[in-house]
Length: 518
Ligand code: HXC
Image (tube, rainbow, N blue to C red):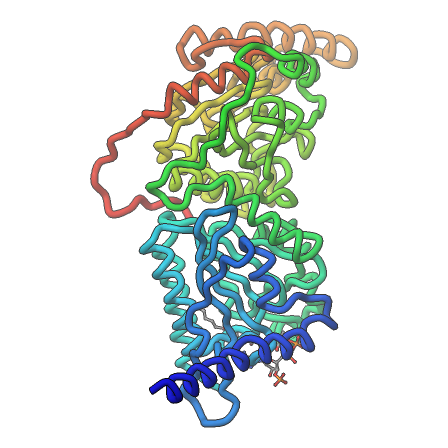
């Protein structure tokens, strides 16, 4: 009957109004005074205009009769970003503080299941109080079920978390399971326990910022991979990131037209003048990397954390690569616990999603020290060795200057499975640096000297060792580097190598999974 249909459509309009417009008004009243966007504003700014399709807009919690808002504190669905599908869920802080109940958890789980089925990235926007206290174990079950799905989706589809408000307690472990986490200065918090609990349990006074503010997570603990200035910056960063990534672990990386010059350019020649002659002088490795990737375009990951290691996405000849580079501008580019873990996770992400890895080595070795040894540099440093060793994607390595000791071995060496290893004539590859070698190999002789005579003799032997022990031609003689190249040729040589390796396949014997040192 037309009238009945008309009435039902009107009823739908009213419900939709309650689910969207009224909810949005409530959210704006709550969020705007705090300098935060509403959940729908976030979604709309993130995706292509008009592309968002919400699912479960009418879901409600199954508790008492009163206060059962539509959506149950989550806005979820699918959309496109730059024309490519993406699934997403976003917590609505204006509804039960964005806490996850049984119903909203079911929606988030549904979105993850959908992302895995159709093979597209999934983005979670976190802004809430964690498991909904009123719902007790049902809320915990919902969160745990979500965590399990994030773990199952790991290595299948890219997973990205935005923290745009609080994320506390066990709730932190859902973003922690995803591949990339973005925080916003001043408004993001990620803590297992806040200041009150810390004081009560340990007697230590610490502010929320110190424990889990955006800066802490992005620069000290490394829980966050990007520190954004504001929400728009955070959403932009994620959109840019998605542009580098394949939709899933079976799809190829996005490919752009290759408009790079096949011949050497003025920028290529600049590569001859960046690395200082002195092996101990600092320089910024991004000056090298940006001259090798297309248009100097790099998206740094974990930029504020373990700055002695540089990890970034870029493109070579139109296709995505993951760049791993020691950063001599910070702590001489030494390998320490944080740098090893940062690079290991990045290498594993790239490997899982078929992204070739381009390594630039300039490393004095692993960092000595009580703190590092007691902190687990052996167990935790092993992660990077493991990550490179298990990687089956194309691996291209350029040794630009120092590659000493374990640092040589781990930074994409031939022995861990790299396919094409190049060295600049400025490369120094050895078990230890010449100065260190003098002290070990000539200790007895030097003990008989002192003052200027000793210093002079040390310098003399070090100069000799530099030629006899650390020349790149020794590694080239053994086939450990495939070619010693003019730095100016790097971009063209890397592009050629990556083109060659497009068809790389590696047979892997059956195993349930390896046991990476954790
Ligand atoms: C139900 C919650 C809630 C929660 C907040 N609210 N957290 N409701 N369950 N977990 C409600 C508040 O009652 C309030 O409702 C509204 O949300 C806003 O909260 P405020 O406290 O006023 O806001 P603010 O001062 O900004 O503080 C936000 C907060 C704080 C830091 C998130 O609310 C908080 O600490 N919440 C509890 C966090 C927590 O312990 N969660 C459990 C984590 S364990 P009204 O009606 O007043 O507006 C967990 C297990 C997951 O999540 C397991 C994963 C495997």
